[in-house]
Length: 71
Image (cartoon, rainbow, N blue to C red; front, side, top):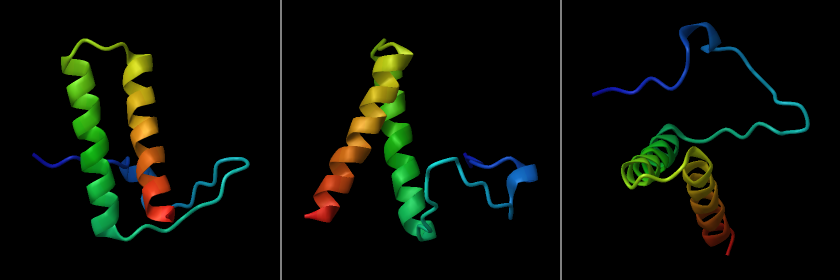
């Protein structure tokens, strides 16, 4: 199964959210982060968690990983 994360109309276009910076992430790192987020999302969904709880779990796991890298 191959997961496409971008719509074809957005490929090669730079989208800069207001008040946020863009960070270039190597492809292998990006794929790892995507796989980790999908794993957490799937686990939380299968456990019957609400969408709010699921998104919070994905967000907090990312914050935890970023904090670990920073140290």
